Length: 98
Image 1: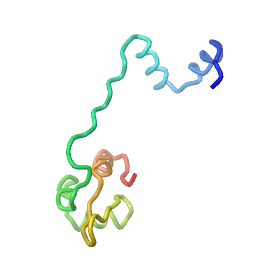
Image 2 (image 1 turned 120 degrees about the vertical axis):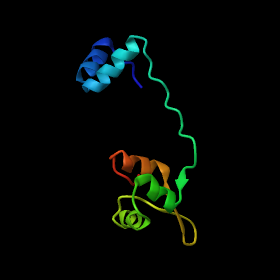
Image 3 (image 1 turned 90 degrees about the vertical axis):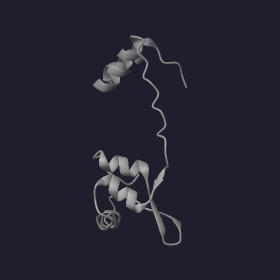
Image 4 (image 1 turned 45 degrees about the horizontal axis):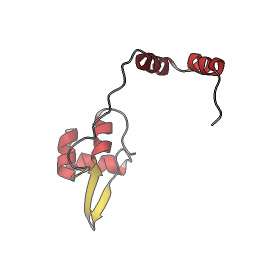
């Protein structure tokens, strides 16, 4: 990658969205972002625990899967799991299926 001169770097910074500028300012102030720790626990959840986590019935969970709001993984014939990350995203209101 070609070396960027100072004017190009400054222009790029000024054109960056406000949240990117704030992140750069924090770094320049010596406040480095902490690394997010990997979540502990299983990556997949069974249907009953997943329904309980979302506060819905198993039937509602299956309706959500059929509607495409949540994905499923078949681990054995007829045995399904859902991704913990998808459950957390859905619960946080960020969508579901990744």
